[in-house]
Amino acid sequence: MDLEETEDEDILQYLDINNYIRKDITKQKNQLIKQAFKNEEIRIVALKNDIKKIYIYGKQSKHKSNNIYLNTEWKYKKQSQKDRTIRHEIGHAIDYKYDYISCKGEILTALEIDKQNLLKHQEKLKQTLKSKEYREYAELSDIIGGLTNNQIRGKYYHRDSYWKKENALEKETFANLFAITGKNDKEYLQIVKQYLPNTLKVFEELIRRVK
Image (cartoon, rainbow, N blue to C red):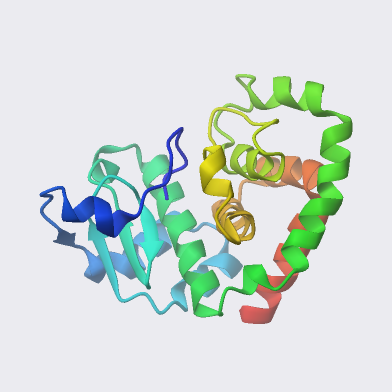
C-alpha cells in the first residue's frame, strides 16, 4: 500500500460503499515493473509473479488475493512515488506467491535483534528520521515504526492498530525491503544496513531462495 500517515482499511469493504470506476491496467504489468525496478536481480524476481489483475481503484493501494489495487490518486503522483508503490505492492505479491516467506520466523528474529540496538539510540534516531535528509526514506520509517510500536518513526508510518494484525510486521518489512532493494539506491541501502543489518541480511537470503 502507499506509505502514508493513515490507517489501513479493508479495501473490499471500502469499495463496496464507494462508487469508483475500476480501471484494469493488467496489460501494463511488465512495463510497470521494468520502469519501477532498477536492480536487475530484484526485477527478475518481480517479473516472476502470479498477479491476476492490476486495477486503479479505491482509496488505498494494496495487494489482496493476488490482485493489486492502485489508489485513484496513483496516476497523478510523481513518477518516483508511483514506482515506489509498484515496488511495494509487487513485494507483497511475491511474498504471497511463496506462501508468505516473510512469516517463517527468520525476519521476525532478525528484527528483534536489530530492535535492541535501535532502542539504545532511540532519541537520536527519532530526530534523524524526522530530519529533512531522511524525510523521504518512507520504507525505513515504516519498518522502524512497526518494530517499536511507533515510538521511533519518521513522516511515514502505519498506525498502531495496523501493527496489531497477525504477521503485519513481517509482511510489511518484506514489502518495504523489496521496494528499497528494487530501487537500487546505494546510499539508501547503506542507511538501511546501518540500522537493520540483520533484517537486511535475512531478506537478501530469502531473495536468493526464490530468484
